Length: 386
Image 1 (cartoon, helix red, strand yellow):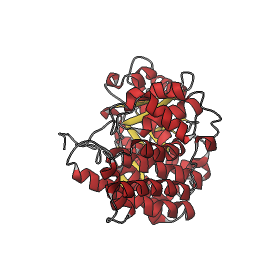
Image 2 (cartoon, one colour; image 1 turned 90 degrees about the vertical axis):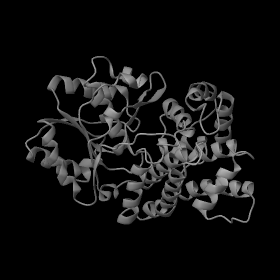
Image 3 (cartoon, rainbow, N blue to C red; image 1 turned 180 degrees about the horizontal axis):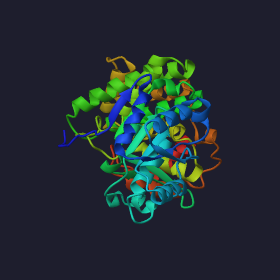
């Protein structure tokens, strides 16, 4: 296990009615920018509830709406301009991971003299950020409890991660009832996203990081148990609660610290999203089994077999390679059970004309991961997934 320093500054208020803690934002100033996406939080009544609490606490509220599923740098720039013009004290995201990511980039950009995209290109430039708070409405990305924001510039076909300790939320409200209205498609995509986060951490080359591996296996079993229930029974509180907390645990450092390795599938999928603006979780569901097929070998079979036995309860009497292949098949079948696409054609990608360009951009970000991948490897994965 590697050396590490672990700190999660985010205060979590989990469960029904915990939105009442929004009144605590008054401790950080008088002006708050509320960041959200479309009209769903207004239809569910969450928008009105949040606004009443904020104004009841004496806060002056400003709004940045229309955040996209893959948040654009243009939207971030609008938020930064508003923060500077109105001397905003803090940022509150009400929504899913995309909304929270946008809010993080806005908070960092408001304290940076240059253009916010410069921070996305070079996270070391982030020296400060406005206080960030969130109310989560979609269990998926774990952005409510980490220091990462994924921002896109579609004019350049770029989707990149801003990473900084300064953009970890100070407080997040996690009320599973706010996810009851999430569609089957988005619930399934969110489940695939959090499962991918755990798998990216699980497949590490760091030896004897056994605590992290056991955490991963427990979370994966939780996803397998409760993901299909949430898809079929959207108002099942236990299903929503377990998925919501799994999403947070998957990427808050608990699994990765001491077992760090560059991720594999996420950098590849980010190119799909950057070129085609597809749903991130759907892209991960398509790519993950094909990545597994590509990297499975006699050298890696033992780890995949461990995954199969611990997560899928596969027969321990078989040899590692047979168990490994069955574990990959179980993963593929699970995504199908959730109703997720299995091929790139299923999400509207008509040909492979961009595979070479996407692979060239992804390779530097995943080239030293669990199994090093070069451009040709990534092209092969794209073609297999097509």
